Image (cartoon, rainbow, N blue to C red; front, top):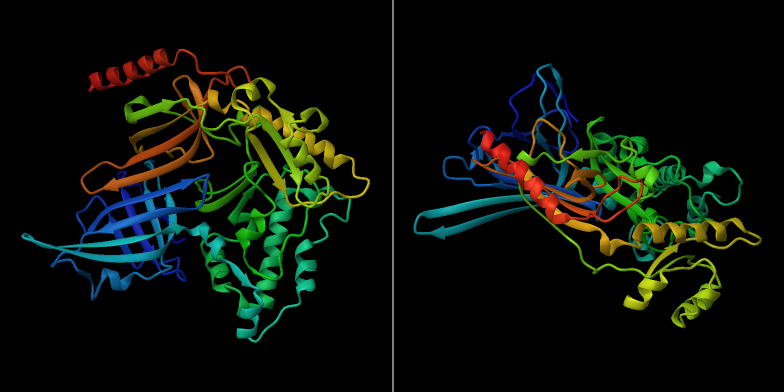
Length: 477
């Protein structure tokens, strides 16, 4: 990113647009404190969206259809980089970092004709800068190779990506952090080796705007794979880097999502095992918690439902020969004969067979007794994490964006209604003449004060107490 060290200015959003090859000097800037053709923006991230999203809306008129010599639509191009700033306060000189960094993937110009003349609307949209890992591609489809007059040896590709993770006893080779970054390293080497088949320019953009693997990815260095890793790369198809890693970190056990690292001023990709063990949940260094300020809240809702109920918890290796037998036993409901499967017998009587299955890209090694034990332990953890989803509250909170603080991001916790909730989505909005707003979507709401999940009882009383805080604060003004 460019030089963000500036004197403190009164909090307000600002937009800067750069060419992807030049992160020093913006081609356009829009200060929302001043009237301009910028009308609104939205941006958001989610643990369920590996790219994030943003939209800018402009209302050009006859006097402002151009800035300088060219119209704005002609100055902005696909893959240009957008920085959205929501300034945070300090009276000292400081580095001002963006709240969101995105890449333009679409621009749309609309003209609406009416009695009052022509209304022009320019819409710019795209995803986060770190979402470009979806566009980092190697084309090993044989038809593409023929077209590009360059072929790859599939066996060599497979050998490169397997990396012999499972041939040594070195525990370092089992760490999630080590494996992902090693795959990234070899993906780059392969791309350079088959540069006519790879999107190397995308890698250049990622390095320029974020950095190397240590800057792009935030991965828990203590998390280890529970099993031997299977074949990592399919040498007969077109693969993105995201395709490769998503194949070895399956949902719902793992999360992959973009976020802004405000310590480093970088948009990064977080890859981790879901943080629902209580020792991790209560570690504020790993999962930040933000108390919700009642005076910022404009609306909220919370709810319970049984849309997501699980009664059977089972993990298995995709290449294991015994899975067909286990699947048959599950269908026959002979759970006692299936060691390692966790079943909620009481809930099964209400909801029947509702499995939570996790499929690993792995294989059983001969004489391996550790992996089955790891899988069985994981099934118990899955039951702890997801066995009471119908008792947990979900909901949304819409509030004014606090430009003096970092707003909650997905993958963090909030303190609300004297309980704690997990943030799964966050969307920021601003329109000209209106204060910026943030809407967050919540899950897993409960009372965690006793180092475990408990139901938020007396929810109506919690409502009333929170509402009274809002009324009292409004009365103070």
